[in-house]
Amino acid sequence: MEHPISVQSIEQNDARLLFFFRLDRRAKSRLIAAMILIGCCTLLGVAAWLQPSSEGMGTHQQLGLAPCGFYAGFGIPCATCGMTTSFAYAANGQLWLAFQTQPMGAVLCLLTAITVMISIWTLYSGMLLTPMLRQIWRPRTFLFLAVGLLLSWVYKIAVVLMHT
Image (cartoon, rainbow, N blue to C red; front, side, top):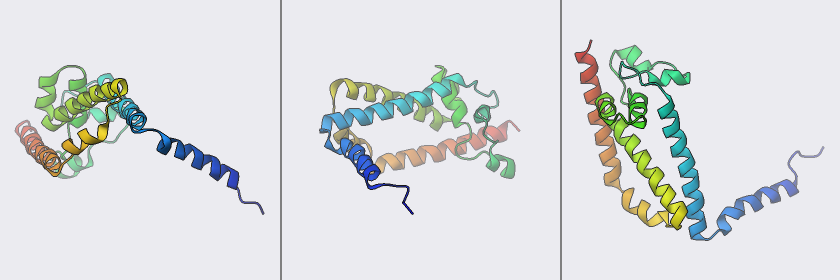
């Protein structure tokens, strides 16, 4: 019995994989920037397409996703409740409403937009991403994001409790 994967198909896949590793550093940087650009633009495009929920959360349900189980179970929003709504407001240029809805969501949307600009610049200039990423992604960056998420969660809980 012949195995469905032939040696030739493995060699072809290896050749495709090696293509990336044979590129020079600037070409790799441009390729990675293109992938990041596509991902970020898709995210911002979907956010701009969504109609933000006036309740401050639940916009993700327009994508066919279920309501927040944490909120349904405990009566308080989860740490990410309102993020999609905040992204939708920010992507539509309503930054103040985005910050009021979920501050960390607004910050992440702005960071996504900045990432789009950096990706475009990298595609144009061939700038190497590694030195910049080493400067940005340090332990303090993760600490800042974690504290921001925690503070935004506390804020979101307070807003929801005040309105119920």
